[in-house]
Image 1 (cartoon, rainbow, N blue to C red):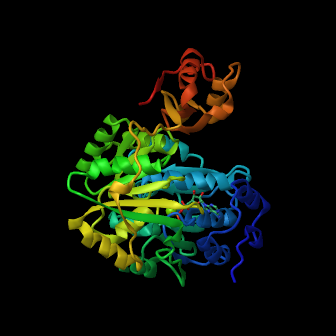
Image 2 (cartoon, rainbow, N blue to C red; image 1 turned 135 degrees about the vertical axis):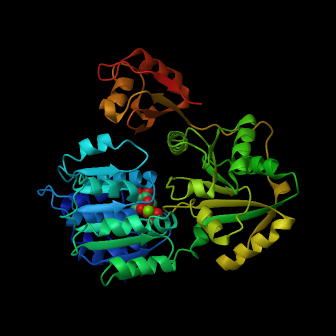
Image 3 (tube, protein in one colour; image 1 turned 90 degrees about the vertical axis):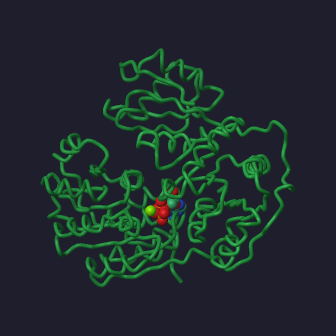
Length: 460
Ligand code: ADP
Ligand code: MG
């Protein structure tokens, strides 16, 4: 039997304390299976589904191998997108917070290189980034990898899908031969095996099967008639009233139209699709994750790799033609032990898609009639929070504490009514409980933060 307590691992107290303060009670299966070999320095090829805790597995290992008294860059994590890189950095920071002076830097494309060059003047202990930008820094000699101990390819399958193969190989050619190389992937196509052969030495191969573990997700399919789709979706939202849900569409045009339609029906809805600029995408994700929007309407491509906690329901407005994509979609609900809800709409002409899913998941689908859903006239989902946006961020040296201070010091606004504060380079988003939104807006617009005035607006 595998032990699942973190304290059974030979970790420094600083790391164990951080794990405890994150309230991780026990290791997830991938952590329990990978960490003992990782901490011994073995290379690893690990596959486990999204949401299974892969980040903490390699992050804990990186911190274990790290020598903060050295100024060399000792760990590099390559991620397919900026968002994933941000999430990974965030998790490493949380786990490193009890270790003094750990320098972690995120280096991604799509942002100017100048500030990154400045930051790199102090070498980071850990660099996290996208392959293109990391390679650029290596070529400019702003990132030096001669002291690298651990190299992680996170979501390797996706990086390969995105065409990063050559960049990855060129980056690796600049790292020491003696290093620990870790490959994390949600799927296991041939390309993964090939790159593993090329860059790893005698890797431990770990696969955690997650596909049949769908008892934590209540999955129901609703058969609808032609022309009933939007009405059936509204009925699902009224019947189940999930506090937050992701609605999947197969095409971005439909995603946009549906978002507008639901907005007009009084639901706070945001659309996530490939036409958004990075800044708009950040805004959508912030508002959804901080609970100021109840329904996120997304395409599969735009939603890949997203990690948002507490999604009560995944709704398939249309079934994906690919059963594997379907399983990925519904895997976003029911995380961390909560029961999830996966609801799908289909017309008789799409029944073959339901059958493909039944076959893929090897269990019969529960099919119900949309007409049996209990709906209430005039029912609206109102998100509990509202997002305020300030025209200043990390570059202005703002911290979450400064903003919380400005909102609550010398005011009667209780801190517990303030939610997530998300800092970006030049912008900050603050979630506040809906009933105090006006008051918070006034306090921030009239007052100063760290002695300076900022423009503040309430986001729709
Ligand atoms: P993935 O396997 O897709 O990379 P993540 O590493 O992003 O998944 O983990 C998903 C979520 O699980 C994160 O919110 C993370 O904080 C949480 N998590 C990770 N390890 C544990 C643990 N041992 N106990 C509880 N929650 C955990
Ligand atoms: Mg991950």
